[in-house]
Image (cartoon, rainbow, N blue to C red; front, side, top):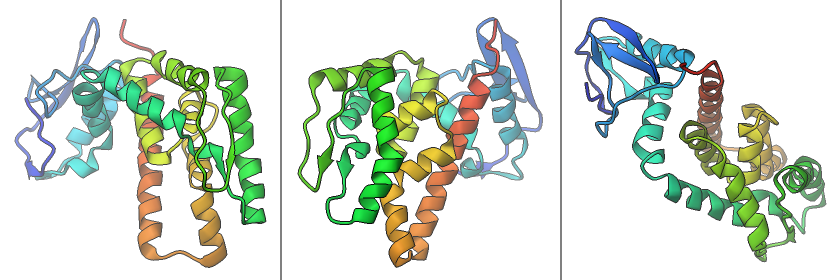
Length: 242
């Protein structure tokens, strides 16, 4: 069954899970769910399959893709990450060469102090744990990272399988930092801490000057997406299919 990502009438009654030697399939009336791209959706752990199945089972008379975030993340891995792994790694490497954490404020002493406290421990972590010696810029001028530093970050990303790489890509594109994304992926910080660090500048400005409802809604949506990526990783890190 090819599961589209637009609203449609519910076409099934029963939701089940089928276990195979290399993973788990979600069944709708005994037919396996496929991705929007037509690929087989073989999930690596039972908890992830349970989460995806629960989303399908929880639909009412109409299927609403926005209420199925774990399924959405899974099919993104199958349809985009796996067939385009090299391109995804290249995209992440570009983030690493222009990491958010490397740009510090030169005008606002309070913000600069908060950046120092919130970001420099992760810059140090990247150096000692990942081997990425990143240069820091103060002000608006860009900084060019060394090839060795960029390669270290790219190599760190490449050690992860497609499922984890998909969650790294989600975290990095939402937060703008390869360093924070890798720390999140490797259980050094949770989704809440990632959000606070990635949006440190924006939260500082909101604290200082206030914030409008559109900005609040956007940040709430990003928090929710990061939380779903965290849930996905928790499902992944349960025992794999044997």
